Length: 209
Image (cartoon, rainbow, N blue to C red; front, side, top):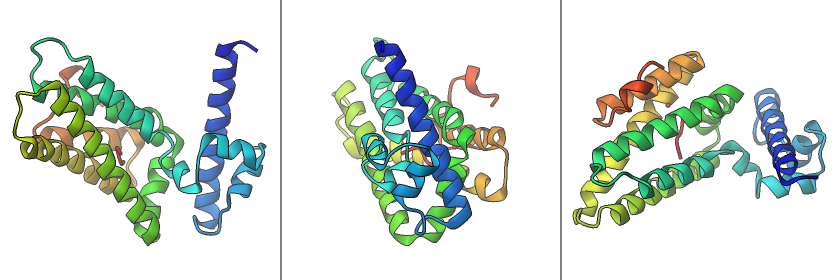
């Protein structure tokens, strides 16, 4: 099997696991759902599940690491002379688009918000993951802009926009908005927070971490 075929198979398996988890979480609740049930519903072994996700909690943020990895890469590959606010705006557009294409499309974003409101231990875990994501982005910006000596100001910028986008997404999802409406709410929140995505992405937030 070629590397490309292996990667496609891996991606399809991962997508099947997420879809199974979303359905089970909705039908019987997070706490009542086991890893074995998710694996069986996706027609794979429990061992295969753990090859993709270290824990059941990690399914809830299935694509978060890839999302943040992309954000860090965008910062590292910024154009010469590109201002920090412009880079942060591009980072937010990347993350919003990623959420729209993945978590909103699969229904995982909606499930995540509802679980965060009803499962206290999961809420705490999600908050820790969000803080880690923010820290990674702050550190990447500080590496890219060593002249920005006020790290607190950089952290405040990142926290403000990510908090605004996450809150807007959660509200829109609880209200029952469509995926397109949630994405629009996220972009609106980024604009209100002072880090609007580029105009090309303005037509169109869930948790970003």
